Length: 375
Image: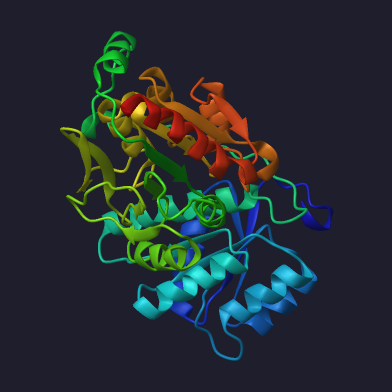
């Protein structure tokens, strides 16, 4: 802990010009026994004074503020004394584009400002905000070391509601019965994933295999994320819509607050975009995508699970491997948070464990091998 503190609590600094937002955020965070609100500041200058006196474990930072905007303050933090920063902002088109700039500048995650219309909205917001704070505290920001974080465990696997689990016997039957088609690449990521996905997708050629992506991100931001990637990558990148064809040379990003599933129609594939319960605390969920890919694509699927907190995707990656697909997990050294890949490795779902810089090339190599089955 900073300043020689021994407390196990994660100390959070809230920086937002809205008194009501500071109050609501502070109440939510202080309600978690693992989190302590170190303080709140109405602008970057007040926040800087507080950081000089005591260094927080995590900063929740607004973008639009007086005196100095949040993006400028974030860049100064990253340049002078890196601290995990979570961007907390409203949902506007302009704002979502700024969120992408903030993630590129070093923010570890982005959330929407909590809405308190109903008690259920507040409960949902509280769960998300506290989970993000814990993941951020665990994140590697340059030389910062990760810290252990306790994760609550779901009572049951809610992915079963959307896509029933498969037994080992059925997995073996699917492995042998699913017809060979063009390869489909599936990627899943969470904390730190926006930059990891950019690194992987930027290595793919314009005629790359059809690619599906789940990145844990709020509703309203995935469109801007897709546009950013589209400007960086050779293949076309777009936010997925229900019924979209899955085609070579195209990357489909699951829309925020919606699950994305792979569906087979003869020798072709489409995606289904659906509501439903949060799975592993997330919607979209990597497990939902991976499980649908296992059951509909089997040996035609090449999948990788990238940096992120928790265990979303671990079950699904194992099912992809059990049905004949090829699987990769990002290694610990190159992860911002080695949570999701670690869970996948420990459950036996990862056929290979690779550094981020090698994953794109290996995905292509495995996809080419899958294509030879079609020829």
